[in-house]
Image (cartoon, rainbow, N blue to C red; front, side):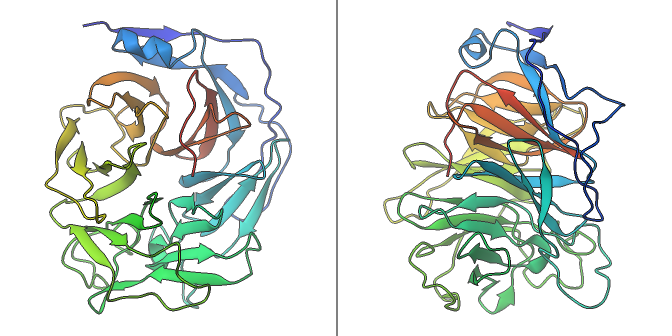
Length: 358
């Protein structure tokens, strides 16, 4: 097997300032403890990875000082947004390096302390009209912001299945037909367990909102239309579609594996199967958020860092990270920058291939 771990660097300095704490305060003082850019350690497992990865890839620190960052999404106007779940907030990172608080609280809005580790929102994406759509996590819904005003109108696309509250929607993806697929594990509940007293559904499902794009602003969700597609995964988490929308990928955090399902013409799914099994990899980290490039390669959180997987299910390479990675997103002016939310920080890395952006 072709296997090499390389450590390289380039001489382009990154000007990101260090902003953001769990309290919502910000600072533009550069960190004295770690560099703003550093060479990427890459586990290259197949020669095909060389077409994707530069010879000298470098991580750039975009933001740090958080607790558990998730849900990165590149906004068309030219900035990155991400969630810091424990601080119940959504943040906005500008190209000049500044990071500001966009919304707090973002998920749980009760008067009493939440009592759990993850009161905030989780995965985020844009619909074909550019509207920010958010997996509510502790809010237990899917919400769509009708404008980029965080205090503007919000439309709830889903909040229950057959009269029972959703667990804690985790990640989401729009299909070409305007429908929305999302995962619903229990990680946003207070105990994060299947025995949580607030858990109403016995399953941790994968769902589809058939007419998400055309739901009128402010209208209540069509609860009878919500489709349960997958009900036999223990911890469905990240979710993504192939470039032609013929395959739906779902990462399962425990046990560690990625699943793939054929998408039927009506948007429902055929029988799925294990796409790649990582259960024997005992490094820190698990399958979580993922995105695809224009060639159909998958980039997913996994053991050791960010896994790069071919459309055939072959593990091509791993971008090794010092801390657990939760999610990734494509962005930048040309769509070739991959952003990764890695425990307490957000990093970016330039690749040779263009990603699929919402």
